[in-house]
Image (cartoon, rainbow, N blue to C red; front, side, top):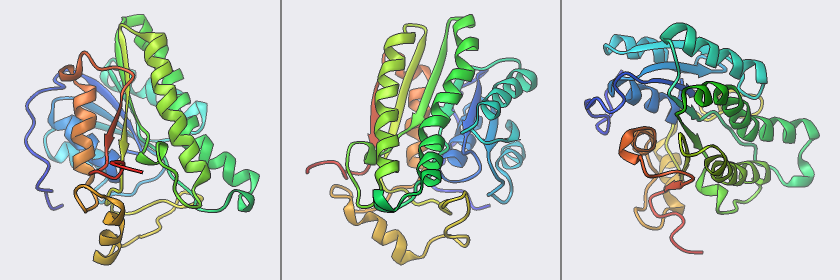
Amino acid sequence: MAEHAMMGPGRGRLQGKVAIVTGADSGIGRATSRLFAREGARVVCVDIQESGNPRVDRLIRDEGGEAAFLQADVSQRSGCDRMVDAAIREFGGLDILFNNAGSGLRAHLHEFTDEQWDWNIGLNLGGVYHGVRASLPHFMAQGKGNIVSTASSLGVLASERYPAYCASKAAIIMLTKQLALDYGPGIRVNCVCPGPIVTARFRGYPPKAQYPDGMTEEQVAGMGGSVKGLHRAGWPEEVAYCVLFLASDESSFVTGHALVVDGGQTLDA
Protein backbone atom coordinates (compact mmCIF):
# COMPACT_ATOMS: atom_id res chain seq x y z
CA MET A 1 0.00 0.00 0.00
CA ALA A 2 1.37 3.40 -0.97
CA GLU A 3 2.42 5.61 1.92
CA HIS A 4 0.59 8.93 2.08
CA ALA A 5 3.00 11.85 2.22
CA MET A 6 1.24 13.27 5.28
CA MET A 7 1.77 10.13 7.39
CA GLY A 8 5.06 10.73 9.16
CA PRO A 9 7.06 8.61 11.59
CA GLY A 10 5.84 8.35 15.17
CA ARG A 11 7.31 10.22 18.12
CA GLY A 12 5.97 8.08 20.95
CA ARG A 13 3.13 10.43 21.88
CA LEU A 14 0.82 7.51 22.77
CA GLN A 15 3.47 5.11 24.06
CA GLY A 16 1.96 2.53 26.39
CA LYS A 17 -1.64 3.57 25.66
CA VAL A 18 -4.50 1.32 24.54
CA ALA A 19 -6.96 2.84 22.07
CA ILE A 20 -10.23 1.86 20.43
CA VAL A 21 -11.03 3.28 16.99
CA THR A 22 -14.44 2.71 15.42
CA GLY A 23 -15.02 2.86 11.69
CA ALA A 24 -11.38 1.82 11.62
CA ASP A 25 -10.97 0.11 8.27
CA SER A 26 -11.54 3.07 5.96
CA GLY A 27 -11.09 6.82 5.69
CA ILE A 28 -10.39 8.84 8.83
CA GLY A 29 -10.60 5.77 11.05
CA ARG A 30 -8.01 3.86 9.04
CA ALA A 31 -5.58 6.79 8.97
CA THR A 32 -6.04 7.42 12.70
CA SER A 33 -5.60 3.76 13.62
CA ARG A 34 -2.30 3.68 11.75
CA LEU A 35 -1.13 6.95 13.28
CA PHE A 36 -2.07 5.88 16.81
CA ALA A 37 -0.05 2.69 16.33
CA ARG A 38 2.94 4.63 15.00
CA GLU A 39 2.79 6.77 18.11
CA GLY A 40 3.04 3.71 20.33
CA ALA A 41 -0.59 2.80 21.04
CA ARG A 42 -1.99 -0.69 20.90
CA VAL A 43 -5.16 -0.33 18.84
CA VAL A 44 -8.45 -2.22 18.79
CA CYS A 45 -9.73 -1.55 15.27
CA VAL A 46 -13.53 -1.83 15.15
CA ASP A 47 -15.61 -1.86 11.98
CA ILE A 48 -18.93 -3.25 10.81
CA GLN A 49 -17.24 -4.61 7.69
CA GLU A 50 -13.82 -5.21 6.21
CA SER A 51 -13.07 -2.44 3.70
CA GLY A 52 -9.33 -2.05 3.42
CA ASN A 53 -6.85 -4.24 1.59
CA PRO A 54 -4.95 -5.16 3.62
CA ARG A 55 -7.26 -4.91 6.61
CA VAL A 56 -6.08 -2.15 8.92
CA ASP A 57 -4.92 -4.35 11.81
CA ARG A 58 -2.82 -6.44 9.45
CA LEU A 59 -1.34 -3.30 7.93
CA ILE A 60 -0.45 -2.00 11.40
CA ARG A 61 1.23 -5.25 12.34
CA ASP A 62 3.13 -5.27 9.04
CA GLU A 63 4.41 -1.81 10.01
CA GLY A 64 5.62 -3.11 13.37
CA GLY A 65 2.68 -1.98 15.52
CA GLU A 66 0.19 -3.81 17.72
CA ALA A 67 -3.46 -4.08 16.73
CA ALA A 68 -6.51 -6.31 16.86
CA PHE A 69 -9.63 -6.25 14.69
CA LEU A 70 -13.22 -6.62 15.88
CA GLN A 71 -16.20 -6.72 13.56
CA ALA A 72 -19.03 -5.01 15.42
CA ASP A 73 -22.01 -2.70 14.93
CA VAL A 74 -21.47 0.29 17.24
CA SER A 75 -25.10 1.37 16.89
CA GLN A 76 -25.88 -1.58 19.17
CA ARG A 77 -25.02 -1.67 22.86
CA SER A 78 -23.68 -5.21 22.55
CA GLY A 79 -21.18 -4.19 19.87
CA CYS A 80 -19.65 -1.49 22.06
CA ASP A 81 -19.59 -3.74 25.12
CA ARG A 82 -17.65 -6.26 23.03
CA MET A 83 -15.09 -3.72 21.87
CA VAL A 84 -14.29 -2.55 25.40
CA ASP A 85 -14.05 -6.17 26.53
CA ALA A 86 -11.68 -6.83 23.61
CA ALA A 87 -9.39 -3.95 24.59
CA ILE A 88 -9.12 -5.20 28.15
CA ARG A 89 -8.73 -8.83 27.10
CA GLU A 90 -6.21 -8.25 24.30
CA PHE A 91 -4.18 -5.37 25.73
CA GLY A 92 -4.99 -5.18 29.43
CA GLY A 93 -6.83 -1.86 29.59
CA LEU A 94 -8.23 1.16 27.79
CA ASP A 95 -6.99 4.75 27.68
CA ILE A 96 -8.45 6.31 24.50
CA LEU A 97 -11.80 5.94 22.76
CA PHE A 98 -12.15 7.41 19.27
CA ASN A 99 -15.82 7.29 18.24
CA ASN A 100 -15.45 7.68 14.49
CA ALA A 101 -18.00 5.38 12.82
CA GLY A 102 -20.71 7.25 10.97
CA SER A 103 -22.49 7.76 7.69
CA GLY A 104 -25.19 9.82 6.05
CA LEU A 105 -28.23 9.59 3.82
CA ARG A 106 -29.28 12.47 1.59
CA ALA A 107 -33.03 13.04 1.27
CA HIS A 108 -35.60 15.64 2.21
CA LEU A 109 -37.08 14.99 5.63
CA HIS A 110 -40.47 14.00 4.21
CA GLU A 111 -38.74 11.38 2.05
CA PHE A 112 -37.16 9.55 4.99
CA THR A 113 -38.66 6.30 6.21
CA ASP A 114 -38.65 5.75 9.94
CA GLU A 115 -36.11 2.98 9.41
CA GLN A 116 -33.74 5.27 7.51
CA TRP A 117 -33.99 8.04 10.11
CA ASP A 118 -33.46 5.66 13.02
CA TRP A 119 -30.50 4.03 11.24
CA ASN A 120 -28.72 7.34 10.61
CA ILE A 121 -29.30 8.78 14.09
CA GLY A 122 -28.60 5.40 15.66
CA LEU A 123 -25.25 5.04 13.94
CA ASN A 124 -23.92 8.59 14.25
CA LEU A 125 -25.26 9.66 17.64
CA GLY A 126 -26.13 6.25 19.05
CA GLY A 127 -22.66 4.96 18.21
CA VAL A 128 -21.12 7.71 20.35
CA TYR A 129 -23.59 7.08 23.17
CA HIS A 130 -23.00 3.33 23.26
CA GLY A 131 -19.22 3.71 22.94
CA VAL A 132 -19.00 6.22 25.77
CA ARG A 133 -21.43 4.29 27.98
CA ALA A 134 -19.37 1.11 27.57
CA SER A 135 -16.07 2.87 28.26
CA LEU A 136 -17.02 5.13 31.16
CA PRO A 137 -17.06 2.49 33.93
CA HIS A 138 -13.46 1.57 33.08
CA PHE A 139 -12.35 5.21 32.81
CA MET A 140 -14.08 6.13 36.06
CA ALA A 141 -12.53 3.21 37.91
CA GLN A 142 -9.01 4.20 36.86
CA GLY A 143 -9.69 7.91 37.33
CA LYS A 144 -8.72 8.95 33.82
CA GLY A 145 -9.56 8.49 30.17
CA ASN A 146 -9.71 10.29 26.85
CA ILE A 147 -12.69 10.38 24.50
CA VAL A 148 -12.63 11.87 21.00
CA SER A 149 -15.57 11.70 18.58
CA THR A 150 -16.01 12.58 14.93
CA ALA A 151 -18.64 15.27 14.48
CA SER A 152 -18.57 17.37 11.28
CA SER A 153 -18.44 20.87 9.88
CA LEU A 154 -22.05 20.00 9.01
CA GLY A 155 -22.76 19.96 12.71
CA VAL A 156 -22.46 23.76 12.57
CA LEU A 157 -23.61 24.27 8.96
CA ALA A 158 -26.72 23.02 7.22
CA SER A 159 -26.39 21.05 3.99
CA GLU A 160 -29.06 20.47 1.39
CA ARG A 161 -31.09 17.29 1.93
CA TYR A 162 -29.02 16.12 4.89
CA PRO A 163 -31.31 16.47 7.94
CA ALA A 164 -30.42 13.32 9.89
CA TYR A 165 -26.69 13.68 9.30
CA CYS A 166 -26.53 17.37 10.27
CA ALA A 167 -28.78 16.87 13.29
CA SER A 168 -26.74 13.93 14.58
CA LYS A 169 -23.41 15.71 14.11
CA ALA A 170 -24.66 18.84 15.89
CA ALA A 171 -25.81 16.61 18.75
CA ILE A 172 -22.33 15.05 19.01
CA ILE A 173 -20.84 18.52 19.49
CA MET A 174 -23.19 19.31 22.36
CA LEU A 175 -22.87 15.83 23.87
CA THR A 176 -19.09 16.36 23.86
CA LYS A 177 -19.50 19.52 25.94
CA GLN A 178 -21.93 17.85 28.32
CA LEU A 179 -19.68 14.84 28.88
CA ALA A 180 -16.65 17.08 29.48
CA LEU A 181 -18.64 18.98 32.11
CA ASP A 182 -19.97 15.89 33.84
CA TYR A 183 -16.87 13.67 33.85
CA GLY A 184 -13.91 15.99 34.30
CA PRO A 185 -11.30 16.49 35.55
CA GLY A 186 -9.98 12.98 35.05
CA ILE A 187 -11.73 12.25 31.77
CA ARG A 188 -11.22 14.62 28.84
CA VAL A 189 -13.81 14.68 26.04
CA ASN A 190 -13.40 16.43 22.68
CA CYS A 191 -14.51 16.08 19.08
CA VAL A 192 -13.26 16.91 15.61
CA CYS A 193 -15.42 18.54 12.94
CA PRO A 194 -14.01 17.59 9.53
CA GLY A 195 -15.01 19.38 6.36
CA PRO A 196 -14.94 17.64 2.97
CA ILE A 197 -12.45 14.77 3.24
CA VAL A 198 -11.29 12.51 0.42
CA THR A 199 -11.83 8.92 1.47
CA ALA A 200 -11.39 5.79 -0.62
CA ARG A 201 -15.10 5.01 -0.35
CA PHE A 202 -18.25 6.33 1.25
CA ARG A 203 -20.90 4.14 2.81
CA GLY A 204 -24.53 4.39 1.88
CA TYR A 205 -27.65 2.88 3.41
CA PRO A 206 -27.39 0.15 4.50
CA PRO A 207 -23.57 0.28 4.97
CA LYS A 208 -22.16 -0.32 1.52
CA ALA A 209 -19.54 1.16 -0.78
CA GLN A 210 -20.83 4.11 -2.75
CA TYR A 211 -17.57 4.44 -4.69
CA PRO A 212 -16.10 0.90 -4.59
CA ASP A 213 -13.22 1.90 -6.86
CA GLY A 214 -12.45 5.20 -5.12
CA MET A 215 -13.24 8.69 -6.39
CA THR A 216 -12.48 10.32 -9.70
CA GLU A 217 -10.42 13.49 -9.90
CA GLU A 218 -13.59 15.37 -10.83
CA GLN A 219 -15.37 14.12 -7.71
CA VAL A 220 -12.40 15.07 -5.53
CA ALA A 221 -12.32 18.56 -7.05
CA GLY A 222 -16.06 18.91 -6.56
CA MET A 223 -15.74 18.14 -2.85
CA GLY A 224 -13.39 21.10 -2.45
CA GLY A 225 -15.80 23.56 -4.03
CA SER A 226 -17.21 24.72 -0.68
CA VAL A 227 -13.80 25.16 0.99
CA LYS A 228 -13.32 28.91 0.96
CA GLY A 229 -9.89 29.17 2.58
CA LEU A 230 -7.72 26.40 1.16
CA HIS A 231 -9.89 25.67 -1.92
CA ARG A 232 -9.48 21.90 -1.75
CA ALA A 233 -10.79 18.85 0.03
CA GLY A 234 -8.80 17.44 2.92
CA TRP A 235 -7.17 14.06 3.41
CA PRO A 236 -7.89 11.56 6.19
CA GLU A 237 -4.35 11.93 7.50
CA GLU A 238 -4.94 15.65 8.08
CA VAL A 239 -7.83 14.82 10.37
CA ALA A 240 -5.92 11.97 12.01
CA TYR A 241 -3.21 14.34 13.25
CA CYS A 242 -5.87 16.52 14.88
CA VAL A 243 -7.36 13.47 16.57
CA LEU A 244 -3.86 12.53 17.75
CA PHE A 245 -3.43 15.97 19.32
CA LEU A 246 -6.70 15.65 21.24
CA ALA A 247 -5.92 12.04 22.28
CA SER A 248 -2.40 12.85 23.50
CA ASP A 249 -1.08 14.69 26.54
CA GLU A 250 -0.16 17.58 24.25
CA SER A 251 -3.80 18.73 24.63
CA SER A 252 -3.87 18.21 28.41
CA PHE A 253 -5.69 21.53 29.01
CA VAL A 254 -8.30 21.00 26.26
CA THR A 255 -11.71 19.50 26.98
CA GLY A 256 -15.25 20.04 25.72
CA HIS A 257 -13.82 21.40 22.48
CA ALA A 258 -15.05 20.93 18.91
CA LEU A 259 -11.93 21.22 16.73
CA VAL A 260 -12.93 22.31 13.24
CA VAL A 261 -10.75 20.75 10.54
CA ASP A 262 -12.35 22.11 7.39
CA GLY A 263 -9.80 24.08 5.37
CA GLY A 264 -11.90 27.20 5.78
CA GLN A 265 -15.35 25.85 4.89
CA THR A 266 -16.95 27.58 7.89
CA LEU A 267 -15.12 30.90 7.53
CA ASP A 268 -18.27 32.86 6.77
CA ALA A 269 -21.99 32.45 6.21
